[in-house]
Image 1 (spheres, helix red, strand yellow):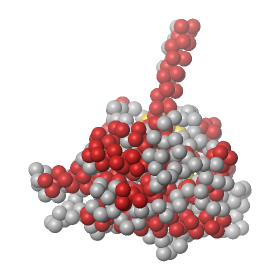
Image 2 (tube, rainbow, N blue to C red):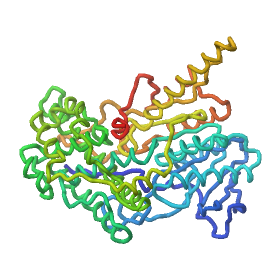
Image 3 (tube, rainbow, N blue to C red):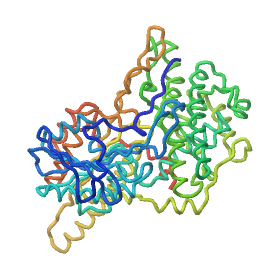
Image 4 (tube, rainbow, N blue to C red):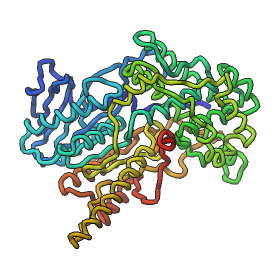
Length: 542
């Protein structure tokens, strides 16, 4: 199979209409210029974070404050596949992309965004920079009346943290494709992927407990190479049913099991979606009644979807683990008590054919058993874990009208993040209703609590895998909407922007017919109240 494994948002910078910050700029003294009726101001907050503010001549008084996503904290050598050549560049970002920025400016909204003082996992610094930037924007543009915060990925994490810690500064919030809760939830998913790749396909992958300084950097870069090497070998292994030559003991003990089944097992035990940019897990080549169609759809497609999704999750596993370990001073991953058999109990039935049946499932889980010396578990340093847990996290409290959006098949920040937030709000709203009923017994006046949370889902189409005349899947096309990381259309982003700014100005979320109509007119979105995304494995085990 000839396909390019893709990775989207990690480390990507939007191409927006601003230049690097002048070195003479200070927090209280931004450099401003007006071009084509838009005033652009650039400067730095007191923590040294570059920022950009843009206001059109027809400014309507509402600021949209954008927080960008995770950017790799270190340069990546050019020779490393896919992510090689990445350079740390601290440029501010005031919108998801240039088209969205231009459209919002045209509608009269003010825009602002920070580069944050450090790259990598920087939620605490991000909240601090955003708080200061709101004040700077109001000072520079005193007609500002409302502030709506939005952000993508780690920026969604920052947005929710900002709304929880400083609701007095915001009128509405929109975390998009967010990481939610704590960094541990994402690390658990990513490290399960990395541990699975190491255990099944390349024991030389280090995966955790990276050394300090230059040695740890070299180890992490080496792991990136190894991860992508394994993924490249798995492209052939899925077709030949021969385990990669790097597999070590697993390749010998499990040689009778198709390696695609072990790859799928990794994805299922980590909680990765089984739909990916080009594989829907339901479609095969040729006639739907043919054995080729059924075989591909049931057996190959889920594994190929995991292969594509691991390209994102594998990078996350290496770089965020390395990043958090450097911040915490030691290993923070611990799967010594993880029961992977329980993890995949439901999925083992749903994907029985793709996992090659009960005997193969039993064999793979036996190999993963902690009693097997060929599958050593990882343990954490309690001091490092304690330090990690001082980093910003969420309570799930909704303090301002909040719109959260998640792609159903996002492999980096799965939709279960938004589900966790929705579950927290459901409990919050139930408590508010109970309090209102209690007040009614005294006042004889029932004041219904205002609904302040809306979950928007971005599901992929049921069928979207395409095949060439030869029956080979076509993978050189754009990622299917609803898959990949933060892979929203501009129309979808603008719908979120409209909903969050409307909420900021009215004090409540759109609902009923107006909301239903807007969602229906924006292709690829759903507000189905009966949909429930699976929680990340971390939360299922709490």
